[in-house]
Length: 111
Image (tube, rainbow, N blue to C red; front, side):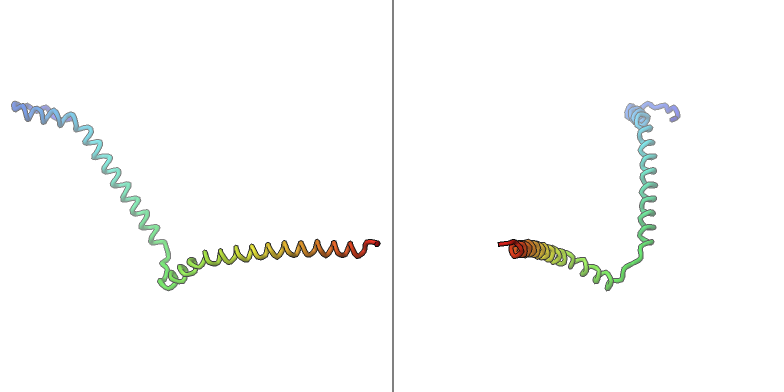
């Protein structure tokens, strides 16, 4: 609580009244600002600790890994193309088996 102040000047009287009106809000803002700063500091510490726990990757290893990952789309396309070809081969084999079965049945059938 603020002490009672005797003020004769109207400007000072308005300043005191304004200070009393906003003092509670300003104290709350100060408190929240301190809490925010503490939370940010804790967050920064957490990030620094996490970063320190990572094993650094050698530039040569990073480059090799990066090149390997860059090849993935090309290999995916190759795998899809092979898959399509295998499907076509399977369809042809099925048709040939069916045709061979039909020919065998035609040969065995009495005329």
